[in-house]
Length: 301
Image (cartoon, rainbow, N blue to C red; front, top):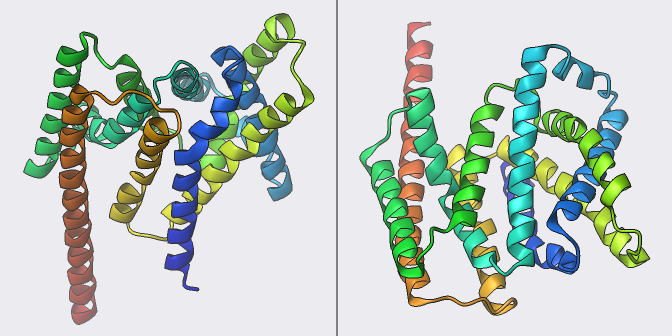
């Protein structure tokens, strides 16, 4: 099997696990979302710590937070990913899984918009169309339901800003996430000691423990795959996650899918299609430009 196929398989596996993870977190509906978040953070820290210990890189953790600016950036990223995890767990507990899937559909489009605003990245006409369709979908859903889709906007916004912050962290994915959950650890332990439930069953504890490897394995697979396939492929593969979330929400959880949802999702899916086509064209153009430069360099040499 070629490296590219291995990467694609890893990407598909990661996004399928993410897409079906709502089934896993539905097992904790009897618990407060904040407590589930605490256990997820704690077991993720132990899982990632074990990986770094095995790799002999555990000492690098100190280097990621050994100055105030570094600690500030990592702490900000930690708060954002914690908010994102909490929003997802909250959505599953209280019956907003459809809205959660909407959030992960619009996240890449929000990321493009954040790149334009904060990094000065130029948007193509197709990317502008995708942003416009996503905005129209949110406006229509707000008008139809009488309230903005706060969970979807929260998930897309926190993950988008998290990605923006991560651009300033010069660490690999495993090391950076380990640093983030390490920053959260004192608050997590404090909450569990003071307010954590004392009557959880052994099976519940086993499932909570599993949230650490579930978080870690998917991240490792995604990082592995992302390094071996084209950027446009990574972008398209990410939509497996919200698609499976949407299917689970409507067919397993039987959440309502009103006419307003239908209109909004139709606009989002159209925007996603445009976004994917634009990403493929951009990737092809970049590869052609690189190929021309390499050919020219060879001729000159």
